[in-house]
Length: 506
Image (cartoon, rainbow, N blue to C red; front, top):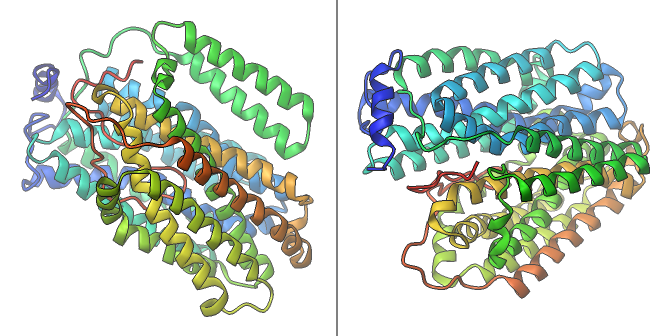
């Protein structure tokens, strides 16, 4: 049992509607199944949104008469607040109650989704997406923390595995569901669908999930650090989308203030001391390269399929299924292989395979054959993602002390999301896409052919960095291994639960 469990048990006895104490629930019990259901529903809302919105972008632009910048912000406003606040969200749950913050996140996310669904124009949609990201930052770490805190130690690994596996199924079918909604009821239902999911999730959580918190989570929250991070990312993103250099310089200056703040405050959101591990730093640089490329690629490929190749939203969403299905089926085995041969080869070969798959998508044009032009590229891309994602997570965890596993995983997840955010902002600028490029098949196709080699080049850079810097971690008395065996997310590597004794350093 963990040191904090006696306090958590006391909370559980007093928690409204809790019929079992945290840390005692068995996976085979009815309560255990309810806990898994509500956490899967909550995290699934955020995971689905990160995969299905891209499919809806052309229809959103057409319906709201929006230019390319609005479509970029539709993706980036969500990633901005999520990346900046996800570490703070986990700390809030530890302090004020994991169930309480999880439920707050679900409700917040649902309200943001409703506002997205009824948005009359692009400005309201972007603002609502930023609100969604705040909700996502509260519920995403909270769903996994509830699994970790609620289940008996003998069942925790299986519960986390079930949670990640069911989440993987949701991620795999997300683009298909999104395409069906866009072509059927309309793009607004991509967001409105979250409201009934939240209506189901919240009562189940309040009735069946025991409350828990970490009694060691004391001190002040680094709210100023989170604000500085969000402002810095927002200004740099704005500068890239609107091509305003002075805004970017201000953003860089605010970013410098953020790192200065994190260095000097006694309880930072981002403890810079963790980067004393060269391996941890190197793997996070690889993460930045990999997920920047993924973020840019998946933003562009659904537009290419719809704008240039004439695919419907449903067909474009379905076309992407091979990558997520491969990850669903093979990511656990990839993790086992990485344990046997070490991380260096997977983290080198994986990005190179992804780069090769991306370059093959240059064959996708107006007269496209799915079997000969689209499918081979996505299969190679999927195999590359399978090869690298699980070893990347394992290497992040193995490169720090076991007690810092939770914060290490959170930093890695936030870094990946920030990389995707910057890529979606920068690629259209670098490729010379005009504000109306997505309305013209010829113009978008030309800029697509300029942008994809950039994504592939970033992956090759990540592979080279991995080959030169990643080594097998030295033998330790205790090494933290990933509990999330299945990962189908294309926006970020999986969050991992904190190991016993992890205080998150908030």
